[in-house]
Image (cartoon, rainbow, N blue to C red; front, top):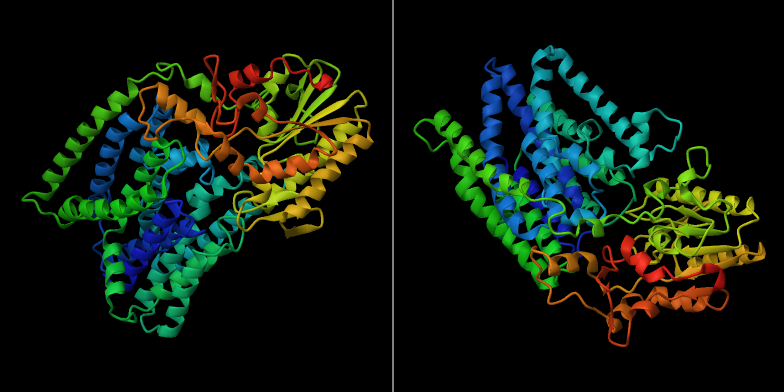
Length: 639
């Protein structure tokens, strides 16, 4: 095995692990997966093309080698992950885990996971098998590639690989950047889910694997190609920069192209070029263990995230990085290597027997998982997403910019609740006393005219839709003179606290700043007042860095909780919400502000459990019952 390939594997897995540790060290560490894709395409295509060239390629031998290489470590990881999940996961999380487990066992995880949660959403941090999506995608490629190359005449192989590379690349970027609301259904999937499907699916990520296939063809057919060492070192520098610095807020995007091209430069030409040093040797050894490290690291971080209710101590994160390397080595040494090297008298029968035994062992925790009821602990309804009037109102306008009927309650509109999920969670409680309520809400899109967050989490395409959404909201308010009050609420951190944040405006992207945000927020409030409407702004809930709803479920239920308690300290909450509080105190000069902390906090703590009611659904949203408990007596028109 080439040293530079093992070193690339080591770099790839290290940046992925550091990124997933959430220590904030590598903003783009997930691009390590892109390196893996290119390497996988290169190695697997090399094996196939050599077999075809020598007329000794056998499908059975190829797939058996893949199984011996990949399945033992995978099954080992799934077995121990499932056993640990019995202790760590809540009942509701069990049901989602089972779907993840099915996807892992059938190599369809990349189609299961995006329907559960987004890769960049906080909820994804608690999915123990989230990372298996990339393995599933690779296995799909391993299944299709040998069949395709086997039946292709030799002279058409390169042109076919190039053709499908281009098709996949165009398809991927079309999905990531598509804005056409009238496009065919398949094109609108990614458009409606922040390009998640473009991130997960084979045909939109195949261009990265095919890039490796191109390198394999070149190495076998143009072996005289020489790549200068200086160019390879430059490629290594580009990989380092690409995994560290945010260039573009979409993914896959320009960073992926840079990583893929840089990896290709290193792969073409197999001459030795790296110096021999202890650090290089160490990274090379990590590359040897990289598959197992990748498999074991994410469940560790996911279990820690859940057990600490989202607020994992730094020392625990650092410990888990080291534990990932140790467990990865042990799995490589005692699971991967024996099976790959065939240390058995009868390899096939031993392999078959081991597969059967492993599946039998997996059946034990799987059966236990299926025996758990979603309602057994009585908490599942508490964790339901609080969409207000309904899920349809997360994006209250249809494709023709008309307000959906489901988002109107009580006939003639008098009160509009406008904002993001922080506005949605107010609706169940406000409905009790306030008739004629209309909900105009879109997740992460605050009720601010003229700007929208344009960050790594919310890209430019989404930001333009947010601008249009708020324009539609103001237009609706203009056309309904019966509206007397507008409730405004938003998550301030979406606009103020992300690294690399820009604001999207009608004139294009601008640098994000507190000053611009405050001006635009005040202008929106003033514009409503000029229409004779009373704006009322609701503050965010008190929070202090952990998921209060998750913590309560674990404290009162059977799942593991490693936090000392679930109390929100008032002083910590004030520090956590310092920026939002400062802005609201400024806005309070021109508008009524409802401070939710006044309903929940004393000088020491903020309540999250009142009259046997979970007030919090998660770290920052009211549960449906909590919204009713807190706001049931609030008459907006009398504030």
